[in-house]
Image (cartoon, rainbow, N blue to C red):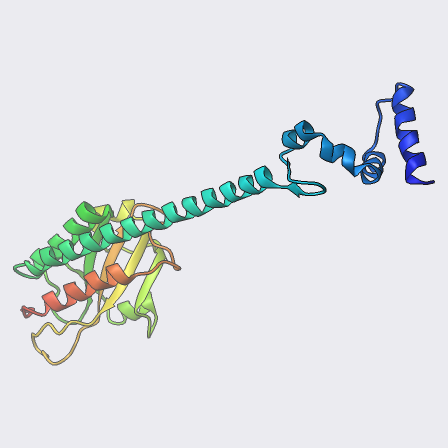
Length: 241
């Protein structure tokens, strides 16, 4: 059957009152009569096409719509990046202010108190604590761990651990019940006493009231920085047994 015959059949169906035209029939008719569509400017504009000279159709409105959608996606991505950047800058600022506060500590007990205060007040955490292995003195306000306690929590060579709260981990005092996730940072301060040349295994611990407050895939640069400040500040004073 030729295109002319198919065109006749299409109009014959319409003349007979049939409204059940199918796309293959309409497509064949448009292929056989392209000029009819090109000459109908109002129809082209309704479907988002723009005629531009003979046998040329400009997809201006459709293309513009796609460009606008791409621009909106880029704007949303840029806003998210800017939001993350602002949050990171604010966190860094709070970390630097917290470091200055910790460096003003007067003794080991004051250092532990200040660490817990900045964790809650500046970072919205449930609390923070300093733990150190025995034997040897344990400053007031610090938590004592048995020999090998740090390796038991972090592994023999582990430096940090971020994730869910450990069952039975009693480091945060009254705030333990609020802890849902924790960050543990290894420390090795030289605290003087009987063997001032030896570093004692220790931990700087942070607790979050949120399940996703600390996760294994999260960067720990800021809490690690705070732990280093605590470690160096603690070395100012010897522990008296």
